[in-house]
Structures are given as structure tokens and as C-alpha cells.
Length: 236
Image 1 (spheres, rainbow, N blue to C red):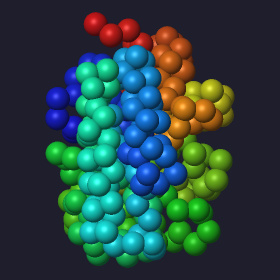
Image 2 (cartoon, rainbow, N blue to C red; image 1 turned 60 degrees about the vertical axis):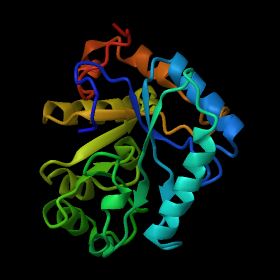
Image 3 (tube, rainbow, N blue to C red; image 1 turned 30 degrees about the vertical axis):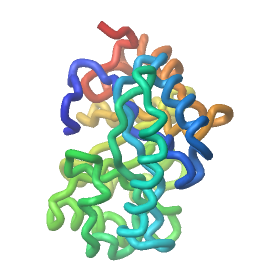
Image 4 (tube, helix red, strand yellow; image 1 turned 90 degrees about the vertical axis):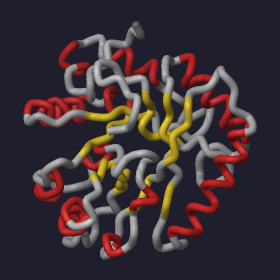
């Protein structure tokens, strides 16, 4: 797992579009800085920066160069009022993506790659790609915002994905506002799955940092129990 994370408490935002000017997230360093300040006030000490990587649009090397430039721009604005930044990516899966060297896209210091599932049209190849990433590439897919796929993927398609060993699941904080999705998460929790929370924040308005929402949800023990390491909403 990510180094230095306390497994008894989660003080990490695993999914955040805070790097300025690289995707549809923060448009500039000023917005990015304010997003990070809000996360810090919400009790977050570490943020995984996960800009979108679309393999149909550019090479991995081109993306990594753009990501580094965006990070250097943000780094100059970082202060003690902001969490630590860990570089990662939200990687849209496509057929045969496992043939690429995906390690540079993994969350910094880990073999975990955040995988965004494609729109469920022709995804007969999806479970096979994830299996190759797991067992041939020896990387660990963390499925981004698993909560989103409840309403778009068939149960059979999700079951194929979730049957893979060692798969990790990231959940957006907003998921706890939807009763159907909460039930889905609780059912997976009974099967032994844990969820890594993320704001998936992009800006300061309609997709702003929202760990306060998660703190309200996890006051109920059944929800805090399914978050990786637990999250009681109170930092000690």
C-alpha cells in the first residue's frame, strides 16, 4: 500500500484532480491551492493527484511530461496549509492496454494503478485486461469510483471484475448519499472488500472537496467498517 498511511485511520484522498491545467480539474494554481487548503481543513494529510490519462489521445511519455510540468507549477504554490501530494493517474482502460509499460502510471511508491472503466458497450475484453495487469504485469488495479458502475454496468460484468483476486476499490465520498449504492457497498463489504475513499474533486463549485460528507456518513459504524483501515471522522 502507499507508504506512511496509517491503516487505523484514513487521512488520504485517493482520487483528486488538483494538478492545474492538465485535465478537466483545477484550471490554475490558485484553484488547485484552494482545493488543497480545503482538503487540509477537512483532515486530509495526503492527496493522490490522479489526472486523467486517455490512451487514445497521447502516449504515456507525453502524459508523464505534462503531469510533471503541472506538478512543478503546483509545487511552487504548496504551503504547510496543504496536504502532501503523491503523483498518480486515472487510467482509462482499453483493449490491449496491458501490453504497455504501465508502471510509471502507478501511484507513486506503489504498484497500484488507478483504473477507470470504459463506458459499458463492448467490454468483453475488460476482465481479461485486468487479469493480465494483475498476474502478468504484477500491478494492482484500483478501480476508480466503483460506485459509478453500479448504475451503468450489468451485474454479470461487475461480478467478472470483482472475482479477480487482489483487486482494490476506490469509492467517491458522494456515493454515501445514494441508498442503492450504499447497499451495494455494504454487500461487497460483507464479501471482504474494503474501499479507499476519494473526493474526485475537480474544482471549488460543483465538484469541490467533500470529506465532510464522508465524515457524516461514517458516523454509522457499518459504513466506517468497510473503508480501508477504518475512518471514524475524528482525527486523534
